[in-house]
Length: 412
Image 1 (cartoon, rainbow, N blue to C red):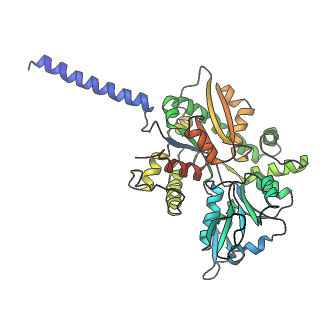
Image 2: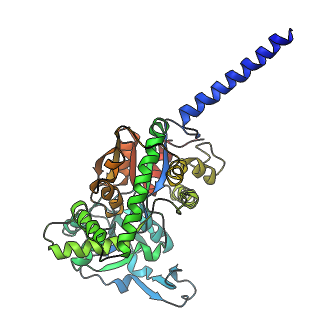
Image 3: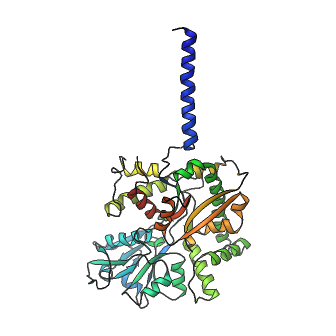
């Protein structure tokens, strides 16, 4: 072959290969992703839920605390921040009925974990169920404190595990509070931000712009909470009172007290650290996925989905590239207005940073038109993400993990 022809052929191959790589990079935004699936792209908060008891129930019957390690055979959880052992009185949990906001919510999963800790069966309650002392019963699908109050007249409920600000609403309404999840699940992952991979591929820069604003909102909220006499704090309380669901009949003082208490019971974050890493979240989701599969909450294992391990599954499922672009400033400001459709749990103080950024005009200043579609719980948020009605969603880590694995929204 003529040398000149050979050189031209080699150059042509290189050019074709370069074009192929460029096309892949354009389609994937430089990241390996599955356009038909969903990803976890950020955090919302850690902690921030609790267990309410029905009137007349005594918290000491259920949990006692100690600074000393309990004796052999005791069922307990240790909180390293407080140095306290929470000791569960199993005999008083057996045969009791508790409400949860939904079978795939993090609160439901945590109640299931407590039942497992105490070696109790965990069974759905229906009218006429015979209550056995070796079982903790539940009613799923109770979305608020007000609904729990209504259920008290029709079911023998002893308590309710729910997110803030519903716990604080119960507190200002003189209901006994058993424990916060902050106490017994110290530092636990709660809500995350999920996104459609199709949206991420098409609008990766817009996602980074969204995060740049959202991060600023989280930082301003945390700073305001550290300075309760500041104007920013007053603005935060005003926005929260307007956006967080409260039952009828509360006085303005009760609403303010409930909101204030709830804000301090939630840890607001956007990533594991200020650098935008989601490595810890990745570890948490790997552990969560495995435990939920073992508990038969998930139908398909990591291997069923083509992964060698749950760690490999989580590595693909969790993508911190967009939030890191926001942290590093490696995105382009929007010249024209972009619309983002967001699904979020209705009236939930966990997601107050989203509303804070909307109500203070922070998103608008960045040329973002954020349209929020409120939902009753995390599984409902997942539904809008899954069917394409929402680009991103604010929901608990368990519903995102359970629904995505069962629907094969994540696979190797």
